[in-house]
Structure formats: C-alpha cells, structure tokens
View 1 (cartoon, rainbow, N blue to C red):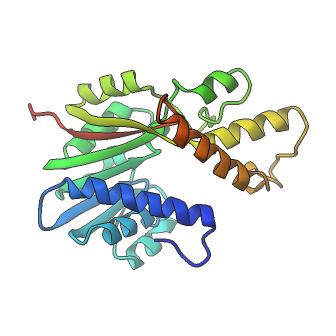
View 2 (tube, helix red, strand yellow):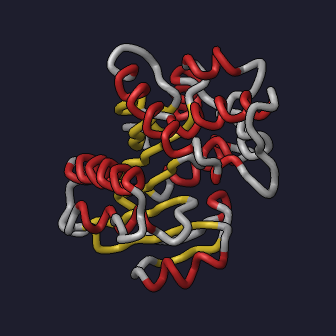
View 3 (cartoon, one colour):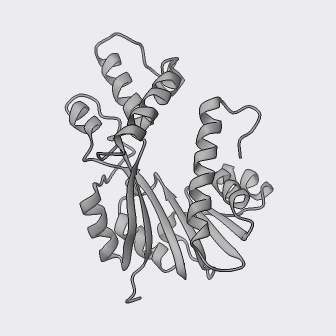
Length: 246
C-alpha cells in the first residue's frame, strides 16, 4: 500500500494496482485464497492484494534476491529464494502474479508450464509484459527502444505470439488488454537524448535518477491510457486460466 514516503506517481500506481487486483480476485471463487508473486521481492503487491480482497489468506513470493526475505516475511509472506522454473511446492494458488518477469527468463514456456501446475482449478495467472507491436517500438527500434532493456530482456512478445505460447503450455488467455508503458517511453526518449549528447546518463547519474524521469512518466502514462482506447500500447496484461483439457 502507499506509504508516507511514496511520490504522487507511486501512490497513483499503488491505487491502480490495487483496483486491478480487486477486480481479478473478485472473479475467483473460494472463502480463502492463496496468491503467489513471481519476482515479487519484498511482496508489496501481495500486501496490496490482501488490502484489496479480505479472502486472501496465504501469500508467497518466489524471488532470486535472498536479501528480500526478511522484508517479505515481516509482512507475513512466505518467501522462496529460487528460480521460478525450479520452484517446488505442494501449495496450489488461486492467483499467480507474473508482472514484467516473463521477458526476463530464457524459457518462458517452461515457466508457464510450471506455474500452470501450481494453479487451483479456478486459478488465474496475470502476465504483464512489453508489447513489440506498438508505436514506441516503431519510433525507437533503430536507435534506443526502452523495451529492449538490454541485456535484461531476453524474449519479447506481441499479442499473437503470446497467445501461441500460452496455448502450448496448457493455458488459455481469457483476456488480453493493453496498458500504459510509461517507463519504456521514458527510457526510449532519454536514451536518444543521451546518445545525441543533449543529456548526461552514466553510472554516476543513471537514467532512473534523471530529473526528467518523473514528468516523462506522468506524461507518457496519460498518452498510453488514451491510446489504449483505440490502439495497442507499450505494455500488455494477459489473464490466463487452465485449459479445459487439464
């Protein structure tokens, strides 16, 4: 949830994330729900999930950063320090969050298959990932597109190949919609400005600390929310369910 030291943009994002979680959790039956956040760090999204839906009683994080464990556990979340591909647990989850993670793994299909096996019968997986079929990619692909995020992004998707991958993993996409990708836009613009020598970005002054970041995030978030009404935007959100044949 929003903390006293959060910026206005962070508070707005927390409010929007909580609203999204509330809508999704409301569609899942059961008196007690379990939620897993893949790459969830200290578990702040899980804390939002608990605030959004009182039926959320069990929350867990799987993350590679062992340093996040005490923060996650102090908030009441179970912590697994592991690659998601290697996660083994008998616990089944009603909701699995895979937010801006699938593009970071070498084998997205392997990750989805493993997570499919962790779902309850009515469980859902929420995938958020960059969209390659979008205006910002067409503008910046030959200079500096933020969606590349090299070398951290390994596999990138558009709606069509995401659906194919999901289907091959025994899942189905009940919904795919587009959402704002302001960080991609900001990174793209700042990258171009730096390349042209108009601003300075280096180890001592990294991109996310630049004074232009906050106004750019606000501006491009509005741009993408408007564009989402009539065209694909920089990010996709997919709601996945188990295929009926499983």
